[in-house]
Length: 136
Length: 105
Image (cartoon, rainbow over all chains, first blue to last red):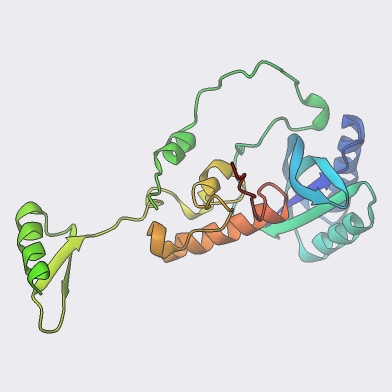
């Protein structure tokens, strides 16, 4: 067993339920192959930095996975065929991160849309990043 | 030659901490010393330099969107390698653009 993280960019016109449906579909493949989904992160509907297959927006979804190589290969194969996915990547990692800076909710349906941006307290990592200064 | 000698005197007088200084000797010229440059990512673990910390990655990109060389930023070789991988992954995921256009005023 090894640790992986998978990110897929789903099409813009999908509803939150459909995005969760994709997540359930993929997690079923992993559990069938004796793997485990450690955690999931929904990053919201984000603008792409450049156009991918004529799409300029997409749902970002991250899955932290603990599984074997054959199940990961099967997951990649299924993701490649799925038409509602614009792009997907699977990386091998040494350890899974806790909630990342891009985290919005665990599932797409749980996402709270708040127009007034609540000022959250900066984490220690944010303060460390703010102290980095590059002089060129 | 004259300029070098003058520089030697000034640097030796001003900097007393020997650990922070890097001594360089040249042929036919005296030993001169200059300040050691610290890695700006010295306080970070390698796992923290990943493609999810976009605010961190942005600091190592030029206004055109290119990666600054470690020769300029003084990042240590291990961190520079992790940084390059992180930036390239973020570009593949369309979180960062591979190139930025500069608006001409």
